Amino acid sequence: MRKKTADIIEYNKNFRKENYDHVNLNLSKGKKEIYKKRAAELGLSLNAYFISLAEKDLASQEPKDETV
Image (tube, rainbow, N blue to C red; front, side, top):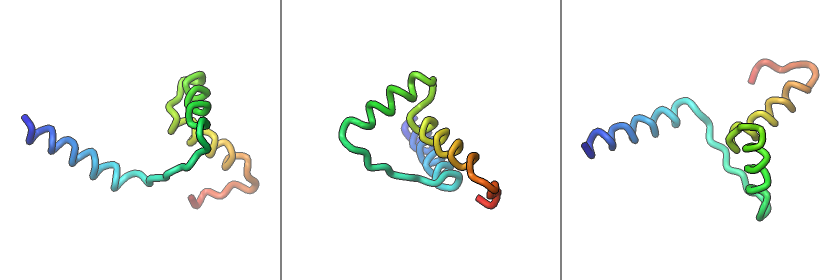
């Protein structure tokens, strides 16, 4: 059973590496919980909350740059 679990973990690790970029954020103490609470109020994860804010900002730019 351990081998199967290790294989799944390795597969997931490789999938994330090949399909996603990784970003680290440094926040002032206490800000993470504030953002996390707001995200939960909106029914989002903290990650989804930050992505939605970034996407809204990009969508408001003129002209639209579709190269990214």
